[in-house]
Length: 92
Image 1 (cartoon, rainbow, N blue to C red):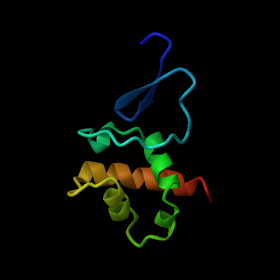
Image 2 (image 1 turned 90 degrees about the vertical axis):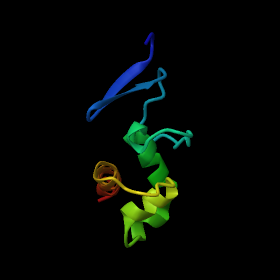
Image 3 (image 1 turned 90 degrees about the horizontal axis):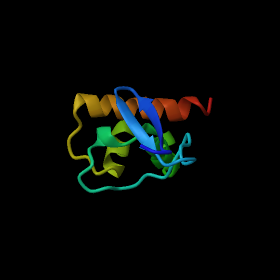
Image 4 (image 1 turned 120 degrees about the vertical axis):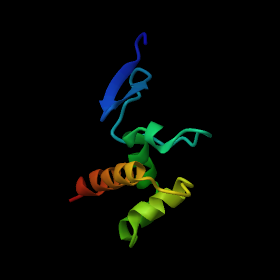
């Protein structure tokens, strides 16, 4: 890993280049990457880039649409819900 930083998120460990770890980072669309392979910090950046989600009647469905997810598993739905809660709770 060299000088890279590792940060635990639930059961996953994400590796960041030195000095790049932030609360929010820009979302990077990477073909073939599963939703569970996306750091919550990237998802927070994606949510921040879509302020319309705050007023959405179904935030999880709309975030899944932005991510182009066709079918939500229970695990992915829970992960997205937790990211949305984390993002909007910090504003209160």
